[in-house]
Length: 327
Length: 242
Image (cartoon, rainbow over all chains, first blue to last red; front, top):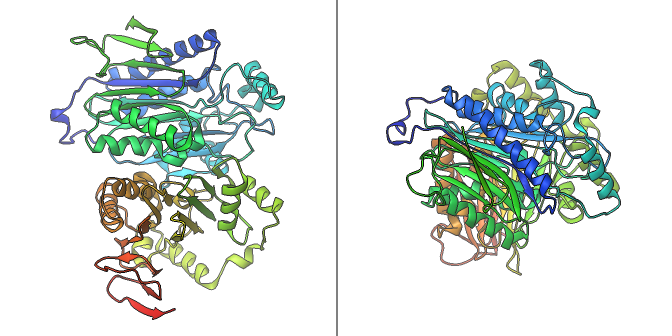
């Protein structure tokens, strides 16, 4: 990592992490509460890495891994199945100092797709690999694999059945998980992971694996991850759009709002984003009724003045019922 | 092979990646755009869609030529991806952008990927925002060059954003390519056209083959639809009447 960047002197050295567990139109509060709790755990796991002087890349990978292992989320265990009843997963890790990225599209059987994306980032000359190539890379580095049944839960089986019979779902489909972080060296990074949408065609590639759509990170602007209607996110390159607005002087919060509204006008697609710049400014916005999220550190335009956001973790699934716990 | 087609009126697109056997991957991308609910499909899914619609297929030998065999041998001899690229433009994505009489923009891109990629490497060419982008509000773009670098900066989307902010396609293309070289060290080229016919053609490599009919380029003040301009750099430009 570029520890000696000239940006360090002017930057906020307090680390920051923001995590989201996906958007929802769900009426079921118990589900959103479960999801919000999961994002809290993920943020705490990522923040521990940062507190020990770890890099932003390790922090976001750790946070997303926690959510992949948690069956509440549509990533890793708990991923939705495609129309053939198989689980195909997608992930992305991008680092803001070099803008290098590692994307994995349509991988099966690996317990933590975000670890594979991390491998693509660090050990491959390439930016994006398909399912078979990612699996080969994962095997070369001895990553853990699981049988197909590991990834499916009662909830995802029920979801698949509901989709097949056109029943009204009790939770919405489009919920990639993601994390953005700023470390004590002043670098930002992002990571995201998804099982895609329920009953999708086998072979559909999620926006999640695509740098500029599912996520983006550049030290000269912002780290951002997106969730929501994937095809709309791809159509407008949501993450890159947000980063360009920040490059042009907007705050991450304004840029997130403006870009999501643009996506809605252009494609009628809804979604949510979290964003973070190297100065520690935070952006959290969603055009769906709910999105589970958690955050430690940074400054948001919604914070009351003079609070030290590094002493506690904020989390919730909308912008009204926000809980805060001391770290 | 990888391909992308995107239309500027709806920003809808069809992309296919790592597809084999289909004679014209761009036709498969067009099918995904028109017939599929999705934007981007992997190899097997694309092949299914192509077969459902009876697209022509060819055996492996059809796609491999003496030139591509020689390029593979050159790579194996030099064993260096960077030297290989710098040598003579081994990144040969092709593309097109167009403006029709209804005022709509579109782009299409197709590639066999870089010389001797890792099996399963996905090219920027099939990725909206990187290999190509089209939006009637700004511009249609198609890019070529160092695919990894193009993906890292989302070259096509950058160009479109600069045009949205008021730059001409030519200025936006130059600025974005320069940014890509400075930020991530990658060279490439792009073609662009906006809704009023202003054209952008720029490349940070030594050469890029290009051809154009119509629109306004550089210091031209009128549109020229009766001849085709073409060349491999921006100095030796030839013109022929259509």
